[in-house]
Length: 147
Image (tube, rainbow, N blue to C red):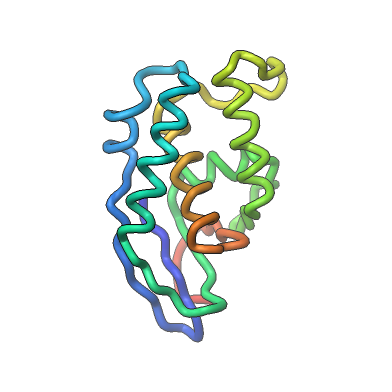
């Protein structure tokens, strides 16, 4: 998953050793989610984000063209557009729905995608936004320059 952070048209770089393959292989298998494995995935992801020591300038904005984030934004109630703004509150709401789904308590009309990749995306983005203090992520059609 590629995320870009821009401040005054300069990109800030950092690498976090978390990805769909690592999360799904360790914690999520198939289309069901287990509460204990979800908690383990959160702890593992937190540890990797903290160990990465990514240093971004204050005021940086996150941008991505990743389809996984587009799926998360749509599942979180963001209207489709070429610049979808996914707010941390929307991610938290989707995470809460995922927890309810893990415990078998989610109403059918609020069901989220049942894929390991979606579960991994929710966990990673929630933890990334929380630990790096990002209030939002822009999901764009293409990256030109930082806005």
